[in-house]
Amino acid sequence: MQITLNQEQTQILETLVSNGQYSSPEEAISAALVLLVDDAALSNDNSLTYTAWMEATRKKIDQAREQAQRGEMLKAEDVLAQLRDKVEKAKKAIALFSFSREERSPDFLNLESNLN
Image 1: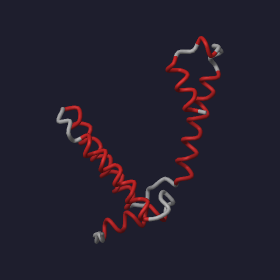
Image 2 (image 1 turned 90 degrees about the horizontal axis):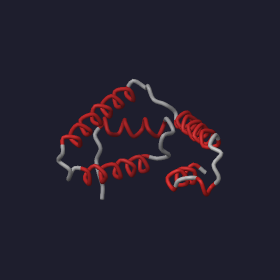
Image 3 (image 1 turned 135 degrees about the vertical axis):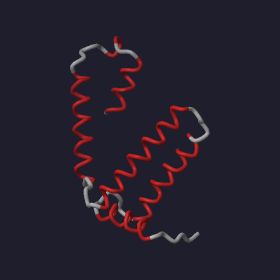
């Protein structure tokens, strides 16, 4: 299948790749398609909560597009560093709890295993 992108779509993909957020336009499109599938699955829920969430998400996307067009984007390395920092802080918080494995709740053990 071939798809023709308009100038704005092409520019968005080029910016995402040049800023290192994706290694190729194909990778960026694949990520977008995953989000589209999730959106389609969620759209079956016609609740007010979903509608409010969709509107808020659309506003955030529009804001992000405007920022990208102005060149106001974070580098992938910076985002990954922030995420690593959050994981380290979470690990330290877990370490503060000195419970034996037998004393820990299943939820706590699940959280702990996901952080390691």
